[in-house]
Length: 292
Length: 62
Length: 279
Image (cartoon, rainbow over all chains, first blue to last red; front, side):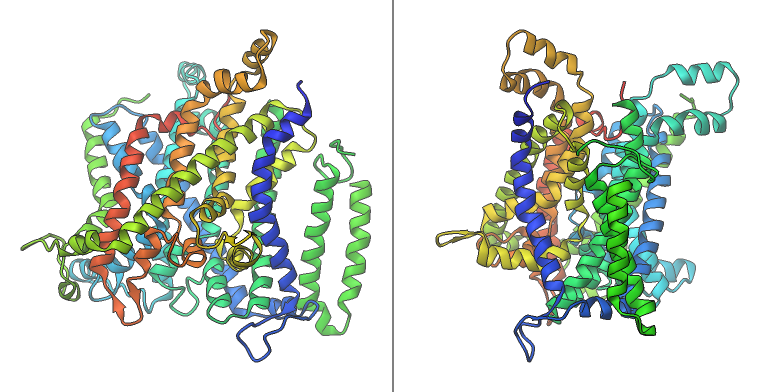
């Protein structure tokens, strides 16, 4: 087509900014991760220590535990958001009075800052002064204490994430459902297919790309959740909600152990990119290629 | 050089993808080695040698 | 498709709306209570006099007002920058046969994958020590924050705009080129008008993401470019948190986002087509 030069020129500003603020910091983190460096410790100089930080990392029970809870968090949160988001998107495809109004209300959580979401949920769930533990114990006799029960704290962070991000899933799936052609559905109804068959054989394959793209972006964001959880539970109780982002934040800054913190960062980034790359290459890219 | 092609890997790759796959494997093997094999007394350099060999094979033939 | 009873749907959505709105309602409840009442047993309903002093305190606070201006400048600047650059980049990715462009596309997205905590330290060091022109340092400046926010917003813009641009038929560009248009004309007069819904949604979402960002702003700014979300966290102190003021600031944080968001409500579905079936 036109000159390749123009194409690269259009991409250049994007690549330049991402190089300066993404690639250079990454190389720097990588560099630091091979050093022992604690600028506020007894020995403030950078000392090259081979793979020492990584050696420490693979035996760090807290870090490995945080990987585990992050995986569980991402799995439960993204799966529930997908199922709920799809159900709500379908529900919004029908006609009923006030549809646009309800859709707007449903998208409101999306615009809230994660740190605000975290603080509101903290206020709602703090034992004895929060509204939710009060309602639960008065009406149902259920004892919710996210300061003590590990699984309740975990479940609360998942529910908070669902509350916050299901609207995004709903919106993207509505966009996909609206753009579907009507013919295959009419044909299927003429052929006497029932609802379940239509869902599995027509709807699902057709909106598959949208579902994958949504899951992809939600997974990416769920893996890097920090603000909300930091605010709600601070990673506790114990390490029940110490997701990797929270772990890095708590490990690097308060302890100023920059070398080790960088190694943790590198590995977290590595795992995230590998997971995303596998998803992208395995599920998303082949589909796009076919359409070219 | 830049062309996508099909080697023994199950997907079409260009040289950059293959380099990336090699690095991913290198890191994975190194971490595994540090955790489980190095305590047995085998040096980490053995895993580096294996990774480099693997990387050369993947970049050339993958 | 199916015709159920529409009023059942309404009932369902009313109940769901209560759940959706409750945390937002609760934020408001906290913001109109004096600090002392927060530690008594809570009740779902608002009762008694509303305590507006928290709002007055926020409005009278000069520092918070300047934080608000910073937030507005940074998020607007960042949204415009990301949408513009994302649009140009996606045009290049969609129309040019560049070697390795799929790799470029994927590796651009990886910038969003990093937990922000990963980049806090290097960005802090780079911006305070390395990225400077003469005496001008990027740390604690608005322009610095605008650029830093690109690391997560630019990938998002590219990710959402790519299908929009792929969805605009190439034949239109080609026809324009045959008529002797320059690339600039094609981008601004053929592609841009058609991509408008996608651009609007990208603009809004990147704006909201930038407006809501906290961790990077908290680390990379001290005073001059401090944003509203960090101002909020300043009320969480070791001696206790002034939740009332914090909730009041939160409400102020919500309002601009609400206004901006409601402006594009109608277009949002049309614009959010990532991965949607291409016709």
